[in-house]
Amino acid sequence: MFRIAVLISGTGSNLGAIINAVETGYLRCKISAVISDHSGAGGLKLAEGKGLDTFVFSGKTTSDNIFEVVKEDTDLIVCAGFLSILKGKLLEEFHNRIINIHPALIPSFCGSGMYGMHVHQAAIDYGVKVSGCTVHFIEPGVDTGPVVLQRTVDVLYTDTAEDLQKRVLKEEHIAIVEAVKLISKNRIAVSGRKVLIK
Ligand code: GAR
Image (cartoon, rainbow, N blue to C red):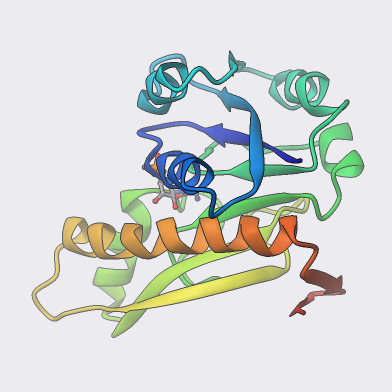
């Protein structure tokens, strides 16, 4: 069975979407670990309630600690609202095997400091007509890896950042599950910056 580790920092609604897809059989995967950089992350309670193995790591050794958990038998690491920057051996050993979901259409509204509601506020302030979400592979830069898939939403004139976040989050839940499914079925090939869906 394809084994995934899910990394979270907050509420864990994307984790919830993955759990739901596993439970319904849409994803033929096992969630081998749920790892957070924040002991108060709501998603940890969700994971514990489902009997999943959970871990909390923070500080300078976070990437190394995560590596120790995932190194033996993890096929894919899924950053589902994980806010720490991954680095070192973890990135080297899991090259093109770590994905992240970002709540905007990369390369817009991404990079350092662009997370959560900041992203939606920036999109509203800029006045874009379309926003969305991006699933991408993680490489050493922030939000710079090859794009696996994107989903779009309209931005309405009257939208607040909260309105936009709600609309984008619905698409994130679809996108993250779809990306895991494609990768778990070996339907993704990466060539430089381009990702082919087979
Ligand atoms: C999601 O909107 C995710 O895209 C974002 O954090 C939220 C987590 O929500 N991630 C980033 O901003 C990373 N740059 P969740 O905990 O409910 O899944």
